Length: 446
Image (cartoon, rainbow, N blue to C red):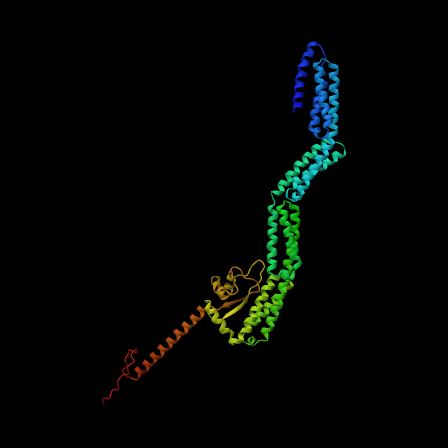
């Protein structure tokens, strides 16, 4: 600090002496002293204090001496000392600049590596690529001994790399979302017994989720994304293998259940249910072969359920009676038909359409829903392959009963009317009040 003050003071003195020199006609080495001062500043700009402290000190000392020479009116010596100051400052610059350029490149490389670690190549692509170009240019310029240019390019690369990293870290929640997605898949896989059907896949997925979480916390997003990708692949494979294994297991159980139902006494009384169970089993096999394992599991479960109904028919002997009682308890009366929900691409089967098909009125869909509450949890969601009971409309039966009742009343009235007419023709007196239960007394007058 003191040295800088001395140099500034010397410059002021130099200017004053220069003015004095002009008035006296003497030549003060202003140009040489000015060049030396400029070169010292240039050396300082490339951190000569750090990389060439000895040479920079000598440059400063020679400049101060030059000022002293001017004060002592030793102008020739002042010129020589100013030239020596310039040379030493130039030497300090030449020593410092390659080292500074190299160190700055190293710093830029470190910043670039951190940006890469933060997955800036994907999350901050533009900044990352621009930083890479600047860094490549700095390296090339350094190799061509264009040290100052290399230094400037390295500075720019460092700034851009830091910007890229900050941008990438601002998007770290993308990694958190990816981890949550894997966790959901893994949880679903475990519901289908993935630990039994794909234990290694589950283990790898869980291990890489841990790595991804640690990387997220440590802001090493590239490592985190790499780990979550491995976790995702294994979680997906575990889910698929678990689903396939579960579908195969359910299919085998359904086959055994249907076979048992066919050989049971109930097969004689529950023919419709047995047929539906067989159809569900065929559908489950077909769906399994098409790798539609979820639907296959659903159809297998339905086959097993219907097979259980068939086997249970041996206790009641008459499955229709038992089912009718159940329907009545749920608000459905009468007999029912069985309908298999269909898969219609672009035109999904629904309770409304089924009600229109059987009743001619979609508003009656609730009757079907009430008859199948044991299977349908959400009336807006029915699955292909399901066997639904379609109860008959009680209104139709009631109407028929009323018609029969009316016909009977008309018939009875007609019979009474005929009887009255016959009596009238014989000339007997008849009490027209047909509602009385009394029998007229016999006339005994001769």
